[in-house]
Length: 201
Image (cartoon, rainbow, N blue to C red; front, side):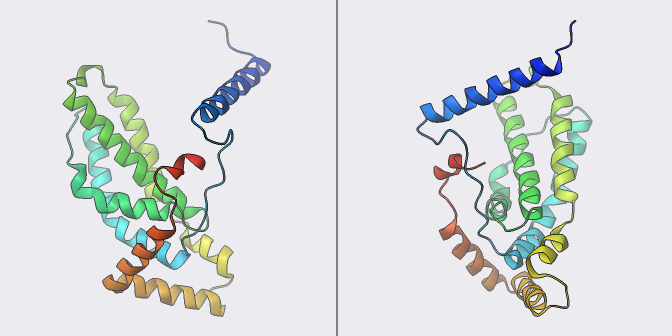
């Protein structure tokens, strides 16, 4: 089997990129996606991550089941609050919140993919090897910890007034359920609609 040259690979990527641009145009979208808006402040991002920490053991157990080449149907409706938190977190300022949210969404998509295979009786054709690989990537994003770096970028030193105020607000949102819920509800009013999400990267 002949390997592609670097020039052939570059041409192939350029062709695929142009094809994706044409598909977007046909759907009435801009040819190139817009940058994802960062509209969720870091104190709320930190509180969302704190709530999502209880999703980690679920994701780890699910990945372990897949690693044993077993497919299990999961009632994702019972985990819907995690999906909502991840959606809000995906629009947070900085890089880490977006990475973390991507990991949660990847695991949800994988669960739904497995559920469909089970529902449609297509488990014999299902690649558990690919599923384990996807789960591994999702877990690597969920397990990472970079919020402190985002906080530094946004507010500077931990000794700065802005940083201290942000940490205090984060602690308030973590410990006060009503304040957390109100902040989430307010953030949801600012997020793009699900229909508008195709506009962004």
